Image 1 (cartoon, rainbow over the protein chains, first blue to last red):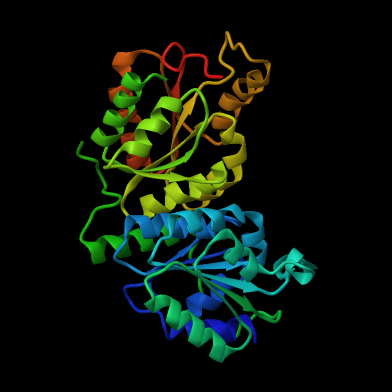
Image 2 (image 1 turned 180 degrees about the vertical axis):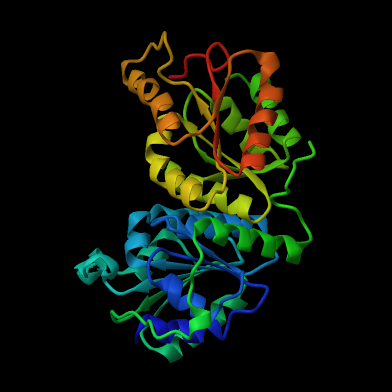
Length: 203
Length: 169
């Protein structure tokens, strides 16, 4: 299973009102091609995807939030899994795309290429619902269950290396981080009827 | 920081409409952590390191709830990469509350280095900061700091000095 195969399955489960936080790297382009709406925050911070998504889940507890992390990102801050186990955000689902390497910078192996098992790490931290998915049908099965169970969940998606790039022209991500931020918060403002970044603060 | 002053810190945060506090505790602001843990209006979230706390706070801002990160000023060093990415790439704010460990007159040898690096790091990351050393400044300066973060969508540091913070441990 390639990452794009898994993302295609996940895109079918994500609703318009759901929010997604993605990790660095080419996953951004793949996910944007499948879900070009404004409900995704493209975070360029390894180790930050899960805590950022958690902050979002705290701010908007009535919405489902999905964190798309990587093995390298998850290994950079495994303490975040411990925080999730203590806080138990019911509206957060963590999906880690585990290709066992730092693919974008030259395929150097991560620790999951040897003895480290991220699902066991998450379960050991105390996350109540965990799974490992090795094929697209398992992705659909585990992710759909975790999105519906009102508990924090963790899925380790064991994927093969490979980057999908054959996108239609209108599905190529061109925006930078600032534009991404504004698209996202304006999306929240419209949907929630709130003001996150007004042009002038009246206080 | 004694409980009465810690109460003023929470009063300032509430006046600034802060609803979330990510925390990695230290001794200088001990009273604030204790008060926040008991508070019903502010969601107190212990984290495992300060970079994680910065990401939690930024995520909360992105979702429309004002948040702060409270920590020792040595935590700024841990959080630098997160602050750079969040602030300079995505322009989301992390409003930080810190005690000034390593201020002139520091009594513990291990704390001096925290003071030596704090202001240079804040300046390197172009983070504006405001110092508080008088009781009557606690509420208004916290409000000013949070409002600045909300207006600029960039980080702000609110730094508490002696005599407000005492000596810690």
